[in-house]
Image 1 (cartoon, rainbow, N blue to C red):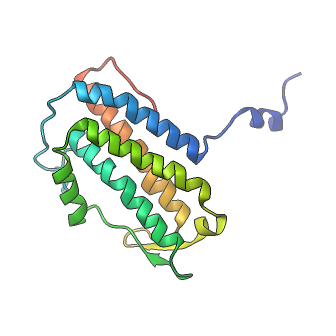
Image 2: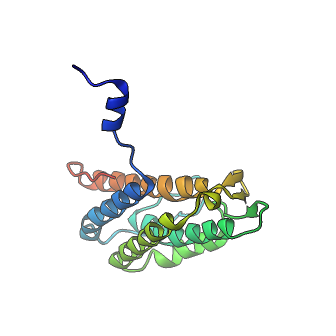
Length: 183
């Protein structure tokens, strides 16, 4: 007898936020060896928010390394803020964001990967301590408008970090088309 719909549904598990963070840590760790082996990576001439911007591994890694603690701090501002939605976030054109990418893209790649791992680990430690009422608190983003703290976690952390894994994989595929990594 075939399993019922309810039984089949319990056989399929949806990755939790912590599962996704663990997968991200594995993906970045797996990418590290290949990115380091690909050195020297040229620095991009256009890496801001302009349409012709083109990031290489150095810009991607510098950005991910700075965005993880940034968005964790923004989450904290929202969940610990007033009952009213707390302003948070930044736009792609933020001068501090671009300045950090410009500065840190020249750091050793192994250091950038270490910072990324530490940033993901900090999120792994914080997530289990977030209470449901904290996750529901509202923040006011300059582009997205009012959003719950959970949206910061989903969009600014998980989806964003997964997109950058895919971006690094695509860059590496252009260099060595027969290799792959997974999230």
